[in-house]
Image 1 (cartoon, rainbow, N blue to C red):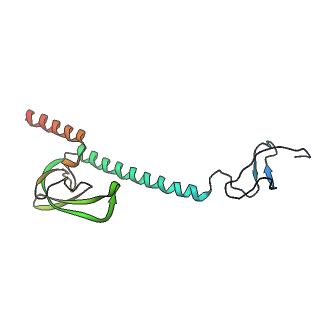
Image 2: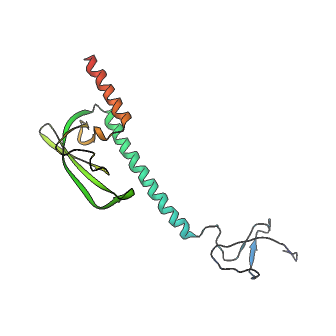
Image 3: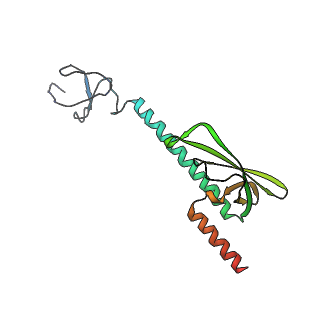
Length: 175
């Protein structure tokens, strides 16, 4: 720089530069300690690495959104004047080609329930083949204005089931 010799360090992750190779360096004139090898990337990770990591980030965000949406739907039903209808588990089906962690299969359970003379279907997915018993009746939490939107009571988290049981016990004892 201006005829002065400056000793510094620069690196590059994409090029094969060997010891004692001569390379051209560009630097900031205001701060010569900030430099890089000409033609190298600005960051320490190549684009394809960031792209690969971005795919996992997007998958994580999608899983988070799906979970949050399901919780939002449940809260919407619980905030409405929900009804509890009895439904029957009519079918269990092993979803082909879908393997979850530890080589567990995914099962789809089909429930049917009726209201006002119409029959509705609810599908629930689980990795447990014994989660629901075919032909047995189960309670479903249903939004009365949108009867096709429901949750199987036994598939709800324990804290929500306890809250709903307590709420019904209090409501039936005061009536």
